[in-house]
Length: 397
Ligand code: ADP
Ligand code: MG
Image (tube, rainbow, N blue to C red; front, top):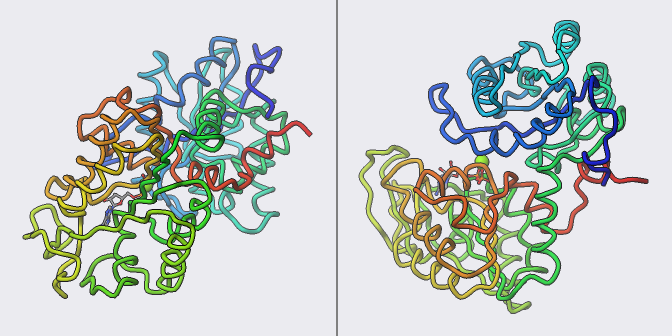
């Protein structure tokens, strides 16, 4: 990959940076600024070199519509605090207002553009639509730096298409992430345990068969556990379930058996009356989940079994909380697993926005883990050995 360190004559140049500023928000407040912090080194390096920095990023999934609650405006403020300088904010993603804002930048100045996903072309499957958007983004700058590791697995206008229209380089964060993940793919210390949880069930289920080529052990918690439990013949009540993935999951279970991969599935869960912080809840065995309840965390027995497997690992990669950790009543499973990872001697990597937010909100320090990756899906796809479009487009041909 061409690297930001190879950029020359940066002073006075306008550089478009794709960052990952997709932070969790609660009532307009940033609850974990880890991703903003992770984007600082690249922006700072360009600022110090006298570049005029134009940052583009997304927040949440506005699906091509302007959603005021997903505006990046509060992020511009926090970015400015962390950089120690004012960050201008442009309410447009591209177009004449953005061009004018970019032209108004001084050397060493920073501009953040509005949520790039307010424009439907950003994530369009139609290449010509993405291209049109990328052309407009490219008009803003002389060079492009790709630093949003969390999105490099996406073929999107601000990630992939724009990199073909400008001299394009990998930023410091993208380079660092690729280095760490490289360590996980080439001769990882064994046993190698992958812990999967979270809520993007179908996204994450899809990666399991590929992970079986690298991992010795796969631990399943979070929302996807219920599709496994159902496949084992259990009733899961109102828990998150992807019926259409049952056959896939059964195939995985057979495959794990065949390959001698240990697949750890919960034996107990915290079953709640509703998806609410104050909902009545009990720990139940997975063969006794009441029909009117939903599982919002793994149970204590499962958490201990998972913790033991983690402690006995040489390498651990974890993506996806074990339960709805945002609610105290359903955070214990995630806390137990986090403690096991933090106290193990394994080379440990945590990937995913919510997973990183979870360990931080539970009081763990970044230094408790070998690396906290900003990318969830991107890390998983990298580990599967897939070609990530946002990385391959930066390769020197
Ligand atoms: P990451 O961002 O780390 O990749 P995800 O976005 O896939 O993780 O999932 C995080 C979300 O999963 C959290 O908001 C958490 O509340 C939710 N979650 C975890 N377990 C469950 C469950 N059993 N039912 C519903 N949601 C869950
Ligand atoms: Mg998430």
